Amino acid sequence: MASRPDAEFGSLDEINEQLAEWVTVRNSRPLDDFMGLSPQQMAQL
Image (cartoon, rainbow, N blue to C red):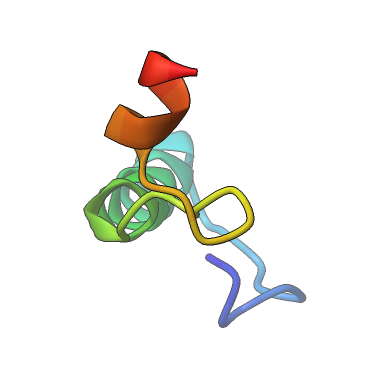
């Protein structure tokens, strides 16, 4: 979806497919670290 910001969709199904793809890509990225600390280290603070 981010690769096609000006995309036109012909149906709601096309929008849903693109959104599902974007969500999958976004969720597969690793979590951002906070100042170099892992999520586990942050939880211990």
